[in-house]
Amino acid sequence: MISATHKSPIGTLTLVSDGKAIVYLEFENNKYPAPKYPRGTDKIIEQAKKELDAYFAGKLKDFKVPVRPQGTAFQEAAWKALTKIPYGVTRSYGDQARAIGKPKAVRAIGAANGRNPIPIIIPCHRVIGANGSLTGFGGGMETKQFLLELEQGQQLLR
Image (cartoon, rainbow, N blue to C red; front, side):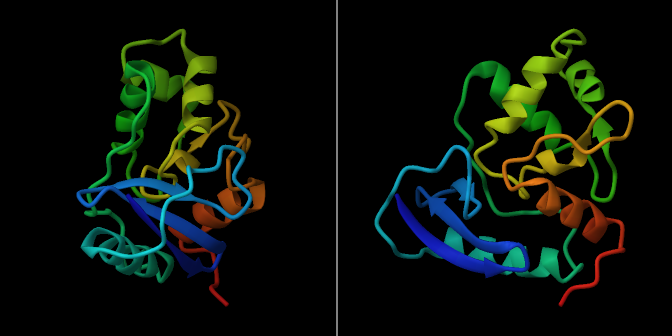
């Protein structure tokens, strides 16, 4: 496992690769920090950096870099459902719970999303409250709003 940092419009991101896939993407002040690994790079990290740059430039809607999030079976099902939410679209936690066949697991979905080890690429920022309100996000509410506005074409990059 190796890690590398990457500057972005939302701050410095840390990427961790196992050589075959991205296993963590961490914000600067993440509530659940990734384990510390030696610094370096590989083709997976370089691909992730290029795709993140294209995403923040509004030129990439679907990430292709391989990812390998690790969690409980429920968390992994919740994270897989996140990858089905299209760019520029939001869903409620209830929508996500129904998508994995657990319509009453709304709170558990929120908890699983909060533990998403690869935000942005696994787009937990696209999940909002049933009433349309922005709710928790590991990168902070300003970051979540930025990402949603970026995907709606409303964010002007500096």
